[in-house]
Length: 208
Ligand code: HEM
Image 1 (cartoon, rainbow, N blue to C red):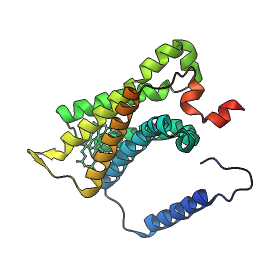
Image 2: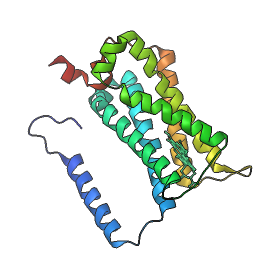
Image 3: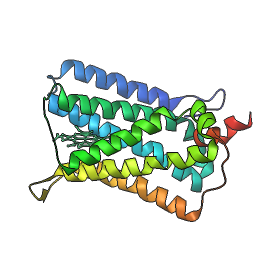
């Protein structure tokens, strides 16, 4: 969050308090199963990546409110990819599963798409590709998010029965909203942007 000088950083302080409570809670609670840790990584990846995309679309319509959050897009995107990597690691190593089928094909497609986004979310990649090409290339991120959503829906569709928990259904709806917001922003026409900074930095910072 971006604060003016001398403003009390309440949101960070509250977040720190909640984080400390959760860490202590984990320290005292019984050990989590590998399957639960895998689900946590998967859901975290889905939420972080959706928020990273959503910020851009919301800033298109309400710049005064959402522009300051733009500097969170890159860390959220990269942390989302790290969580997705942890999810895949958990599936193959601690859980020792060997899943296959369409759900996994979409999972791999999403992973490759997000990985490409993560390694090209820097100024060096913009210099290398040129801004217009880089921007077109980064549209791939929305296909990756759509692939992740299809992966999620297919995983939850077990033996023709679709019965996600409330949390899983909530995350699915959130991902769908992030995609819908992007579609609306796309149809409304995005303002002309010319640089990497305009994607990742709030306007106030860029002007300095
Ligand atoms: C960006 C990439 C990916 C994202 C965002 C993602 C996200 C998710 C989500 C949200 C779930 C549902 C978790 C739940 O049951 O609550 C899930 C399940 C699953 N994913 Fe992925 N996934 C990704 C890539 C992959 C890949 C590449 C594989 C291949 C190994 C994979 C394997 C699985 C499996 C086996 C499950 C079922 C887990 C279970 O039954 O508990 N995922 N994934």
